[in-house]
Structures are given as structure tokens and as C-alpha cells.
Image 1 (cartoon, one colour):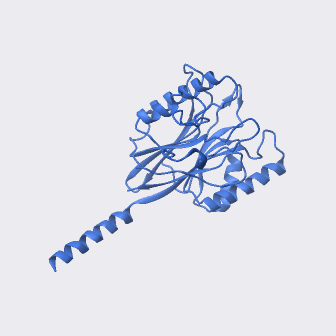
Image 2: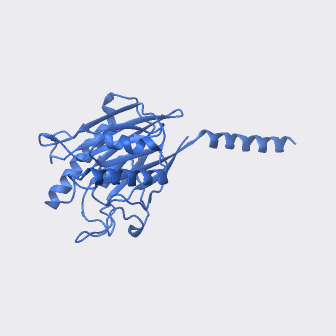
Image 3: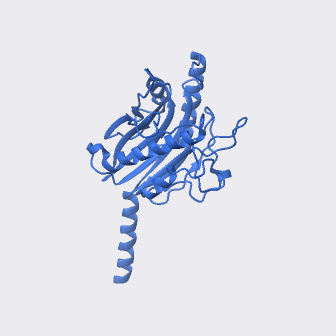
Amino acid sequence: MIRLFVVLLGLVLVASAAEESTTLRVVTWNLQWFPGGRNGASKADQDRQIVLIREEIRKINPDILLLQEVGSAGALEETLKPLGPEWKVAIVSQFKDGNFISGQQVAIAAKIPAEAVWAESWDRGWAGAPRGYAYASFVVGKKRLAVYCIHLKSNLGNPPANTSKREDAMEQLLGHVATGRDRVPKPDAVIIGGDFNTDDPDTPAGQSPGERTFGMLRKAGFRWSFDWVDHKNRITCPGKGRYPDACFDQLFTKGLGNSIAIVVPAIGSDHLPVLIAVSIP
């Protein structure tokens, strides 16, 4: 009888521990010149893409969204508002392209309130990386989750220079992760996601051999959520013209175990969304 009581008590404790954990669905998605799908899109095209993106988000049902190529905070708010009052735009960057605000910003939105948010352009580093990062901190239960959204240099132009710009940006980002800019307490877990414009250089599909972007993240203790996933099953940017199928959209995690990402079928952008489910005890 005592042994049975101990077994039952153990089951109760295990069940309680499971109930205390929180599972979050985190998605990164490049929205392709949102709203409209191209630079200078008509109002009709903007409205059309807003509806498409909204319905895809409704289907995916994420808790946190990391978005790239967002040109309008108002359009993003218009997209999310019909999905429920819990949805809030946490941060939209204001990076400049020359003297003007760029039409391709990064943004974080969520169904849970953000504790702290900010966005910063990269410093004038050794390679002149474009854009910057957006940050949001969330308190989930008794844990603090830090989320970074990035959009690294594209592959247009000189390949070695593009690689250097991505590496420059990643060096700066990991410096921010290490210090938190001394603005918030140290997080218990971190997610870095966005359009990296590069794949793992150590795989046959790697298009930038020798690039250190992934290696720097791994050295800093981050785990790639596409580890062990075949290239054919992680195409986030389907091939077009002279450009082959590519896996450019990534999620790296630290302190969240071995979450495996999946590419979600969707319309509305030339990129596909990437989803992970993370459990926070």
C-alpha cells in the first residue's frame, strides 16, 4: 500500500511538472516587401497581401512572430487586429537606407506581452553590415525568454563581401546577446531567428563555403533547429530563375532543448514560414 502511494505520488508530481511548463509556437517569416509584395505596390496589392498573410497566420497559430521585410507598422497592426485582442506588435525597426527609412524592416509581434523591446542598427563594423536587429523580452512563468529578429545581407552583389557583412552582423549580435546592453536581466533562454540569406556551409547545400555565421552561433552555445533535417525538407525560399531552392530562414535556440523546426506551406510571400514549438518549464 505504501509502495502504491509512492508511485501515485510520483505520477502526480510528474503531471504537475508537465502542467507547469508552457509551450510556445515561434515562427519566422520573410513577408516580401510587406505590404504589397513589391516596392511601390498599389493600394489594392497591399490590401491583398494583408489578407493573405493574416489568413496564413491564423492557420499557423503562432504565439510569437519574427518578421522581415516589413515596411509598415500600421499594416502589420491591421493584419493582426482581426486575429484577437491578445495580438500586439512588440517592435518594428526603423533602419535607414541612406537618408531614408528603409522599406524592409524587421519586426516582432506576439500574443503574450513583451517585458522590454528595442531595435538597433549595426555599428559601423569591419564589413559595413546593413540593417540591424529587433529585440523583445518575454516573461513566461518564472523564466525570461529573449527573442532576436534579424535580416542579414542578401546574396546580391559580391559574394565575399556579402559573406563578410553577414559575419560582421553576427559578431555584433552575439555581443549584444552576451551583454543584453545591460538593459534587462540575463535571460533563461534565447531565440535568434530571421532571414539569414545563407545556409549551413558544412552541408552539401551550403552556398557560401567557409562562412562563419553558423559556426559563431554554435560556438556561443546555440543550436540550429534544422540540424539533421535533409535539405529537401527545409526549403524556405523555393528556386526561381537562376536561383536554386534555398534554406535561408533560420531559427537558433539556446536553453530550450532540441526543438526541431518545420517549414510551413503558405502563400503570400516568396519565402515560407519556419515554425518551432519550444517548451519553457
